[in-house]
Length: 245
Image (cartoon, rainbow, N blue to C red; front, side, top):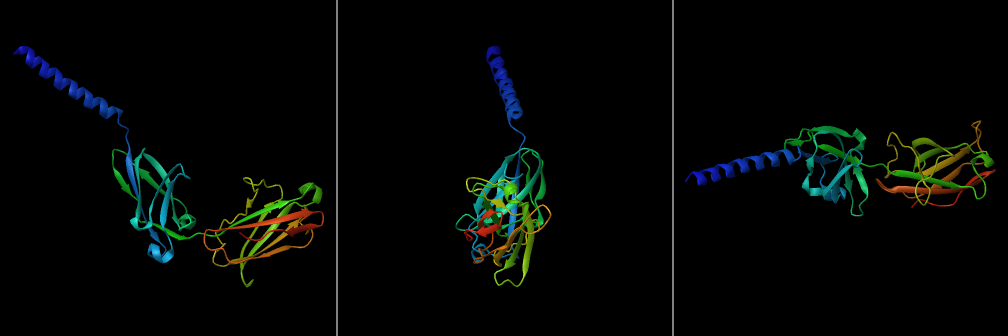
């Protein structure tokens, strides 16, 4: 009788101890729900948005859902502050809408299995086109040709309105196999529905033009799309050798 009682007591104590260990071992995590809206509360089909991807802290965490879901959910997040960016993807997987116009949304996840909901919903607007430029010198270089930088102006397709002015250093390194440089567009002025002409002028270290400006004309690429332009340069200036993708 006493032996059975002792066994039962030991069983209860072991169960309690096991629960305590499991509680200690289980990570303290929380849930983050990110509701979103497209433009002025437009529906997914009307804007051609198929999927939505939310990223935390520059892509350290990412989750994707069907556009019609209306929200993206992150589970098992450690407590802390996260920056949230949301992208709207078309049928080709291109981010044609994003929330970057208003900047990242900062939100605190508090853990203890608590669900935090971003409020108000993150609003997505049309993503700007991205202008990419590459140049080559054959056997020359920036120094040999005297080119210090490239001044860049981007226009509407009919040339009636200036959309953006920017510049890149001739010494700016390219990215990837194709060696394109992304032209800065800090104010997100390159509307993909309007962009259709780009003028590029090489300058020397004294801000004097090197040769004539190179002018590219192309069809407007659409929101979020890349425009990739190529040039060949020498001591006389540069010539365009490619068109927009």
